[in-house]
Length: 521
Image (cartoon, rainbow, N blue to C red):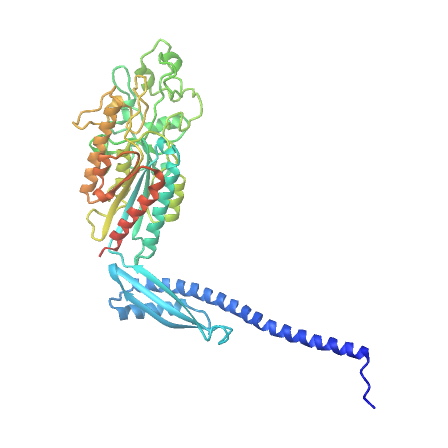
């Protein structure tokens, strides 16, 4: 008798069990590569983190080794390994397998290191351990650098994107210099100043209100020239007049009296002092007979309508305690025309420098000589700042980078003043000398005004270079400029940029030349 067949119910249950066993087997086989992949991803993350930590440790070790007194590769390696091991702490799954510290060309210290990472998935995917590497270079600089960025902030820079392009280019330049400085073996190897200019230059008023090199009591022969009478001048302390007006000096200064306008003689007394900027109250429009052309009429003249002599009305010094005609601003009052941001002295605060560049604004006419004068002041070992090292100090280079978008200009206006007040005073003061040494006269044409300032610029460039200061010039305008080309220290120091969008390339080229100086033995 044949064995009985399983019931249909039993066969169904057995089939289900067989299928479940197959699913479990398939699931188990599928999980294995997923687990391996997960561990592999974790290994990759660990290796990436280890590489980052190795790079940080190697950078610090290379810098420390370069700052040591090592003179041979073997001495350098001993110093480098010491700092590398101190800075590297990754655990037992990581092992430093090699490191090199050598002297390279141009005063460089070249370092490299490898780290072995023991992975979670040993032999299954990688076939063993994983190696990560890092490299670093540090500069044992041959020259320390003092750099002045002298940047045109005149009203024309607001046309199109020129101002923004300049800011981007200058900030990029600072980035390059900071990178170079960070690789140097000594601290503070690169210091940079910033001098925005238009028709004047502005100082930090809080820091320098009482500086001895600012004419505190009107001793400079320049001081009283704007306080004219029918027959001469009156004396006034400009700071007292600011106080009478209930406002403060904003920090702008006038050019010094020639020849000190193109020299860096220490401002000790008299004509060598710096005169605080003070835009005088111009004659009351309704009584002076000159209509509305006097735009800076901010106090009552305090004289009868029968007095029509503009010198008497404008030069009167006791009117500033009288009634004011509006709020004192940079467009109305004694600070009229002093809209610029203040200069920054030599320093290593690169972040603050970038912020100051980003904050620059544009206003006023172009007076390149005054910008160059204050760029020179920031590098000079003399007062006003005395921030620079002595001229000729071994191991130091002084550099001025000038950028401008236009030609020198002194404003004209159809009033007896024949223009507006600026860092040059009024044109009738004869403060600007022509190429022949004669004062620029009132009524001079635009071309003559430009030529006179150009002659002062040529002279100050000559004087600056005679002190061993390298000059780079960048002109952002159609055509070219023999004046700015001659101002530069050589043909390769002059950049003619016809479109401001290429300013970054010009600044990068200059940064490259300066880097070569920094690396020179």
